[in-house]
Image (cartoon, rainbow, N blue to C red; front, top):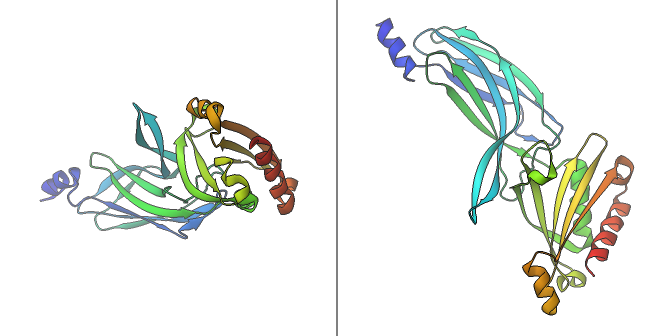
Length: 258
């Protein structure tokens, strides 16, 4: 009977299972993620090579004039190396790791989840998937609020393939704002914002898309010349001055909306 149980476990029948339980389901970039991985033994003794956790998201990239979604790990964490689990035994493995500053936030169409990978030697690997909510980093929150104060509202937030930024991840999260004030509605189509949070400050990239005006405006739009890319670095002092932050972005947007 034991022989047949081993054969069954090798194809996933009566094999060990894994369940990851997070202490919290909501985080901000830079927070510690903590929880416990529970492994429950199956019908036979099995050896596990390791358990890894991956924080996952997806991004969109243009390919042959169509949009293709790709999944990407944000960070990985080794919970435990090889171990053996007996039939019906339950093992608990607590874990903790830090969520990177460049973790995208769950706004718009963006979703994040923690994937658990249990590598079973000589058998079918087991896994678990837990969705999490990631709120903006406090500095990012201030920047997004400053753009709103200038006279814009958030229309969409998604992750896009962007190797030209030369960052750790192959994509960036883009926040797409549209004008709400009459001052900009006739002059700008949208303002796209990308935030790169760092330990002591953050870089903000703004792509300011002007409305086409006349023949020259139409030509500019046709060749994407109507878009103005501005990059600005903000230190901790600037990021803690809410009114000054709004004035700074108003000046930048006004200058490039002419």
